[in-house]
Length: 243
Image 1 (cartoon, rainbow, N blue to C red):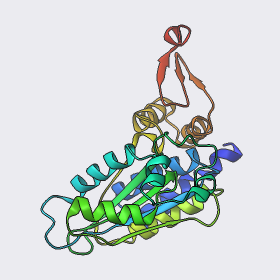
Image 2: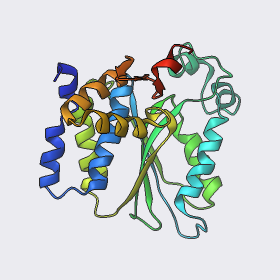
Image 3: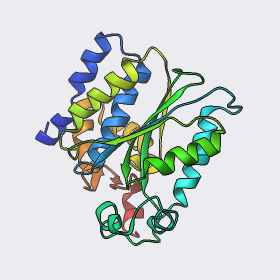
């Protein structure tokens, strides 16, 4: 097993299993850790969205609307609306075109806390002003206005340690845990399918993790008659020659 593979420590999962972690919680650990490694060196942000009395739709439906708002959001729109000042643009969006949409690569945990649930969201991407989030979340839900957003002090350097904290804090430690999900760019679209392909092909978890880490680190890997790419595609050898 390579040094890189040691960061994704399968022994941790075995120990967690002994501590009554469910299969769903162990899966969450793998999904979180994969995204943290993929974005290693970037700044991670934590976003909490609450619920309130009078909300008529499920919490995730409101979140879907929020995602669409974020997809259309740009630094220029935030500037024009007064959520960021002109002298803050370079600070918060260095080298980013003003008309380019905000990047929001997230992993979301839903719990049954509060009135109608709480969403705990980890995300990599651009700065989103709390004032904007609070305004839009209340506008969407009609009631909820408690929004908390904060960034890790340091950029992600130890994915494994951070993943263990996140799962202990938001999944395993939560009796109110309901479900989790993620955006395509948390890792890449279809990454779970590729992970299952590797495990089924290798029949060895340590070797599977070694290959998985190489993909997350941006390397292309050949497995028999297939080529696995960092964007999580599985190509046959004859197909890869054409690409």
